[in-house]
Image 1 (cartoon, helix red, strand yellow):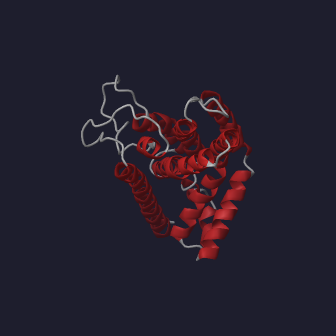
Image 2 (spheres, helix red, strand yellow):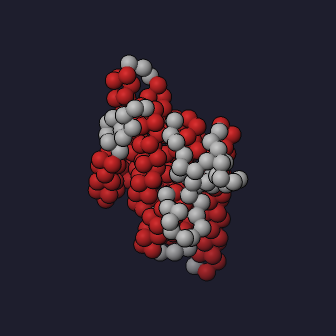
Image 3 (cartoon, rainbow, N blue to C red):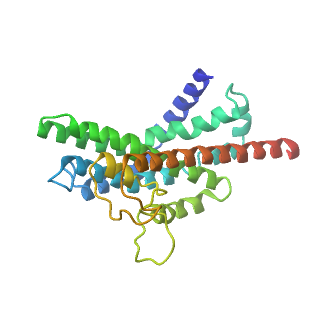
Length: 262
């Protein structure tokens, strides 16, 4: 099973690696992230760790949306003519195939954003003469950028099983904005700034010295702490797993319907 999963991930990763559309979409977005984030020193010159944290949040906000838009149709691609028979001829079962279809392309598309954060951490580590900024970049990548990006990519793929991929690509950005950075001036309910938000604010506040705009404002806006940072991260990961299971169920039902009627 491990060899089959690894082969599926490698194959799908190579396919995306050769797609020029992916890089034509992501490279300009990464240039924008570098410009807004003050690459390579960051916007917070007084605290190098906080500068890494701010950049991690920026990469998660902009980069995750870009990755999800580019990869929104990976699961839905199984419905294309001829692909169902091709996939059926492989040794991978449905769940393994679904993991590979999303995880392989996601790993490739996530590289530019990850490099921005890691290079910034390396630059700051060399400038300061200590490894703390590079360690902070790794923490930001593991606890903020990767979970948020994978969650949005998974949700976009599940939505593409129910709606046309073009529609999903249009909806991804406003939905992500609603969940991560919607200002209180907009009078609609939002999870922005709460432990439910996938932006990673609580992780950044606890482990990367970033100041939260709201603290102690009720059970959804508790003061930053290790427990709430771990809770916010766990909620993001659990939601990603639930989204994957939902997508797997939808695909399984679709395959059964195709076998029954086709």
